[in-house]
Length: 373
Image (cartoon, rainbow, N blue to C red; front, side, top):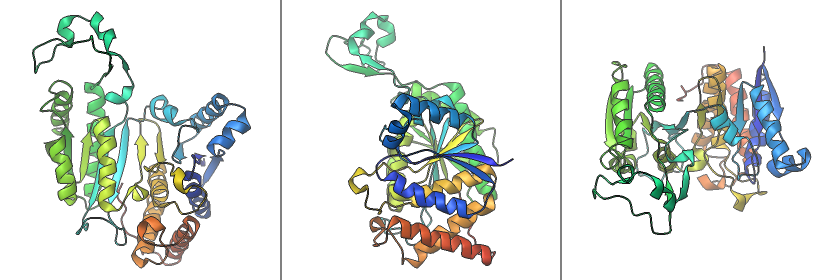
């Protein structure tokens, strides 16, 4: 049976990266059926309303094996369904420096880490409201362990609820450990690092740390360590090559995975995959870049690398390896790079160069570099 892939181009400049990426994927002659949706605003017009567009996306997602998603500004629907509807609980954000990446660090060699972010809970459950609502709760439930006083709910203000559960933490830590084991088999370190603010948020982040420690013991072949999140942030910038797989709650993962991308040269180089028990989707980590929309200069590297993660997920590891090796080759040669990486080439030209390198590797087998998830 062919694999069924939904293509959602995204908004603003994102479709300019998706179109040549899709062209490259089709040139690989894999047994894939693509279901392509129109660009965000065009899709709303075509389907009559944002609601109808969103429902069509959800139906297609349910009938697919996976989705490749461009960045969205909210016009394109589907992203909430892909995350919460499909329960894609592990957001995987690889950060790997390649020769030719314009890193701001003096010595970026050796940076090859993956941040695994719990993707469904923490503050991102979206439970917020007026501070005064909490006045109806028992005083003991809103008392600070630091001040030993109940929360003053009389000022005008808002609250947000942070939720950490044992089940969600166990499954994302197991995912991180399995990923570290897989990377170790391909020459990686086999190290899992846990980080959270467990010194201050003793109950919630403290639980994340406790469950991570207990779960990691199930993997005696994997090394484990942990840092308070502010200490980790410092270490990430000062010496990112010390890390392998890093697991953390949702909010920290959202922030620090962007910081990690900065160590190798920016979000244009940052792929992403979101994995659940029975579904996964893939998207570049950068935004929609409305300031450069229509100029054909958005860096498609993140989209291409996300497509590589998708191919690996679908079972084409060898093709994913060839794609990453082709990207590495184009950067190493340095002749066809987009402006954010010091070049003057267009998005289309960069993708064409990668496509040519992939086809060249097919003609000359053996010229691959092991990919990292």
